[in-house]
Image 1 (tube, rainbow, N blue to C red):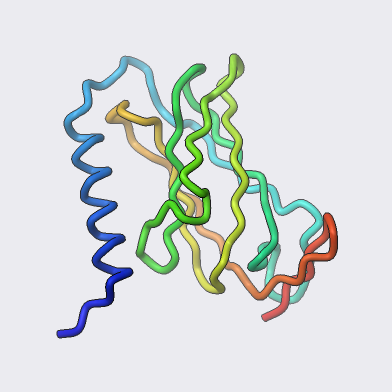
Image 2 (cartoon, rainbow, N blue to C red; image 1 turned 135 degrees about the horizontal axis):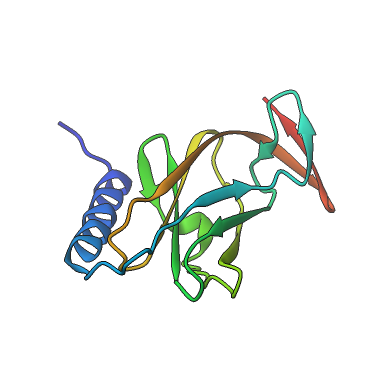
Length: 141
């Protein structure tokens, strides 16, 4: 059986994240309650999201909480598209990061509060080939 380095790295990262979340003391009332991926000025025959184009991902969480965002391509979670950014929710509970997908296909954007031990939210989106045109993005199959 051949196992790719990328798969092993993704499994190791997911395992480490699960261990941190499992060992953390839960905070009362802490939870991610919404996840929104703004498509901005993207358009095309393949949907609203394209490779190489950037999108604002906004999470509603407990004010002051650090939010972890992961991008799973297929079923492999990775932090690479968010470049290790862990935004902190402002006074209104909103935390925003920029997502720039690098691969076509089905993506699962996953959000949870760091160390809260609370459930996460996942948003499923399809990414096509993007052609960035300044603030706009043309999405092709």
